[in-house]
Length: 376
Image 1: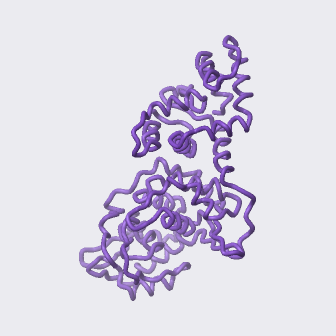
Image 2: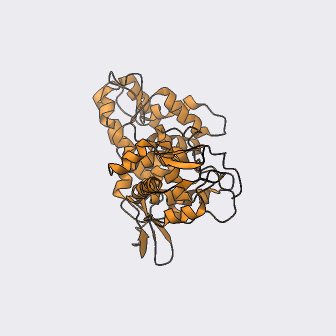
Image 3: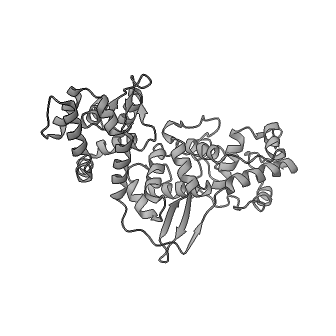
């Protein structure tokens, strides 16, 4: 529901409490007059912008955790979870944050039979506040890049090529469980987006079950195929295609992009717990335009924490790289070498269609983030 609709369901005492929160005069007896006053006051862009700027750091984090979520209705448990995440390592009263939203008319108790035990965010108010968040970082539009990469649909095609490779070739595994490098090279030559086997020594762990053995993009393809049950690793030391995997090839079935995107969200939430907020920021700032990576970095500051050998900056680069492989964004370079990002139409549909906030991290059987703590 929109703001005006929710106000009509709100009793006059609650309307007066909202009025007093903002400290302006209005009739305390006429509900219609109160609603008109509130709509007029909160309908002004400048007034809403000042309210946002007046939020402290914890309030801002809580607001983004609630308003960046594409759902409009939440349980008390979900709100308390978001409030706890907003406080982070600080000690604070989670219920006070929920009460803060209620007093401002940015959150309402559910008004229908379906939502009467839940809490609802005004849909139009959410959109306006999210635009205000984005406008704080958006300046004049960036120039078109001199070159860019767009990999929409390519990940799913290379998944099919991997399955076909396993179907038509004997693929043995090393003692560490990796495809031999010579087989990797042969496989990668068939890909639309080729990679090279991992050669350089360094720490690789935390981004998938076989991340320590393979380059980033193929690691995602491999872990996804294993998670979906398309391949199996036999105790005899070979990769085999399952009946399910063979069916994908024989029936020429294209893997749904939303399933691969959902898998990536769940996989990468291990090292980046607030990935749904980061993805939402990218969509707000780079949909329908080219936005410098530096602008996105400033916006997500505080939502990405260093992870072992990764800094917040390198984690964002990794996130953007994988979103490009998934076809969610295009990545370009300006005439001056500036790195630019633009969300694709398909990417916007994925981000808005799949609420990352409700996607939990994968079971360790399929992600096992610590099993690869080794040098390669």
